[in-house]
Length: 307
Image 1 (cartoon, rainbow, N blue to C red):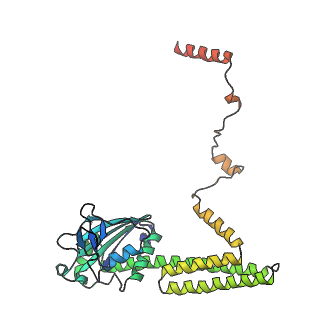
Image 2: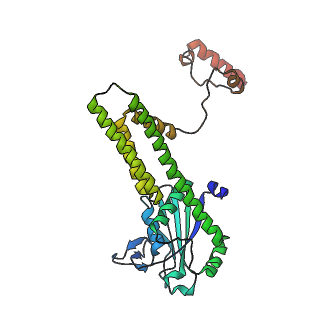
Image 3: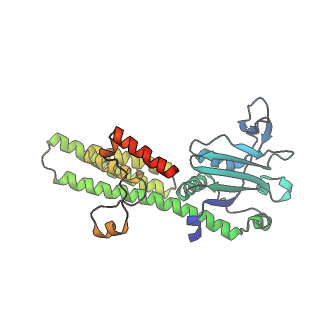
């Protein structure tokens, strides 16, 4: 799955388990509405699409490029969330859609790999089943052949993205744990504080270590929101224990926000020989006004050129 790391989009198929008429499609705009909307045709989103939308961060209202017609479970909508573009298509792949188990969703998400992986990671955690396990495999294979995807490849894609998201969370926990060790060393070596301040510092440090364990437990349960909340508490406790931690965090944030590139250090002989430096600054002499004699010379040269 190395090629997937550089891919700009992911196409995954998911088995739909349940579908209820909890939404409508507004006929004039083809936008998704609740079932209490005064007009519109019912649409059966299904548990996969509903859970997917709930995992997105401030998504746009889904637009139905293919609204439901006679069969409310056949449709396709698109929406955007931050830097992600999402397309979900509901397909009847067995039994003419007479049962919920006869539907699958084709999900295509375009955007940064980490954000894509996080969406699918949270989606699987929110579902009560593995979405890559299909009720009617033989018919599912026929549908996936249109995208040159097999059931086995589809499952590998799911698991790969889950691993990417899990590894990212694990890395965040490891970074915060290392930061906690550094703060603990600084606190232990600082003997110029009062006993009351020392007690407050130790309490904050113990609170940070406790929340680190909470983050690890949440990660084991595939609960990424709980991991982020715990890490946020760890960061706050470390700042209370050692205010200099805030300065380090600010430096890291500033470094990450800088534009990627190279900074040339002038004075290096190797660089000076290879790089042409163009001085675009203006000299003070060039800003002086032309004298009457200079103007006559300029006009005379122009006359010669015209002749």
